[in-house]
Each structure stands twice: as C-alpha cells, then as structure tokens.
Image 1 (spheres, rainbow, N blue to C red):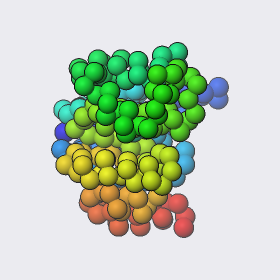
Image 2: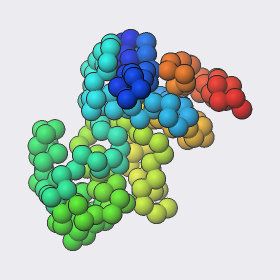
Image 3: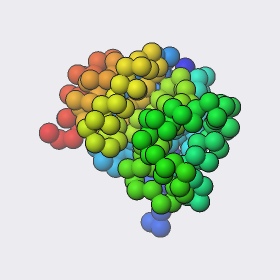
Length: 218
C-alpha cells in the first residue's frame, strides 16, 4: 500500500509562496493501476516526485509499504561522468540487486551497444531514456511510476517497452500521470483529477474524465 495523507506541497518564489496542491489523500493498493489526470502545470510531475521520495511534502506524509520505482524512463539522476554500465552498477547496489547478473539484460533491452561503456554525458536524450527504462525493468518494483506517456525511441522500441511494462508486469501497481485520457483509459482501473490545487478521486475512469473536461472548461 502507498498512502498520501493530507499531503501539501508549497514552493517559495520571489513573489511569495505558491501552493501546488494541498490536503491530498490517496491510497494505492498492490496491483492497482491508477491514473492522475491534469493539465500542464497542474502539479502532476511534482506529485510523482513526492510519491517516489525524490522530494518531501511541505505538510502531511507519504507512507510506502511497497517498493516504488523512480519515474520510468527518467534519466535525470544519472552521473554524467560515469558510463552507462557504471550507472547501472551503482543503481543496482543502491537497491540491493546483483549488478553483474543484470548487465546482459540491460545490454539487450537498451540496444546501446558499445555506448553502454561510454560516459552518459555523451548520450542523447533518447539514449538516456532507453538506459533508464532498461534499468527500471531489471530492478523489480512493486509499484511503477509513469510520468506522461512512455514513448521511448521509435515505434518498434516503444512496443517493446509496452510489452515489458504492461504485459510482463501486469500484476504490479502503477501510478500514471498524464493529460492523455485515452492512455489512462487503456491502462488504469481508477483515476483522479489534479486541478486547482486539489486531487479528486473517482472509482471510474469515465467519471474522472468528465470532471477533468469540466475543470478544463471544455
């Protein structure tokens, strides 16, 4: 179970504090797939960072009773001076996974070839994303966080990612944030809407969509 209990996030700006959201309450059970809808700037990515532990809430608490991934395909935490292989080894050790047993799987899935042994600072954004996705799949989690649509690489590679995440790991919990309703409908059991600093939870994805469209003024 993952629980957000009266969570708020406030950022300081030159013109004063800005509340991104407040009084957020949400529970995600094992195997549950929940979507979070919201327009650009609504705070969806902030919500994902709080759930992952990359940031701390300004108020309330996030309780994690199962292992939670970083946002899938996010390579922002890589050490640029290290090679892709060294980043893999480092991340595996952090999560208590034997890195040597995972190298071949990352090599095969990421399709980076010799570049796996080159510094990550020389990678394109697509190469970083492919490495991050591959590492996410070899460090198994109970809950995967997906920030916007997972579209790594070309259509063929995108399909491979889809199979690896949504078919082979169909038993895992997932939290998907997006403004793409069709993506939420395809992959989620329930959904929420993040709007005007609040999170409203719905049992049915269709009801969430109706509320989202009204909140967006469409």
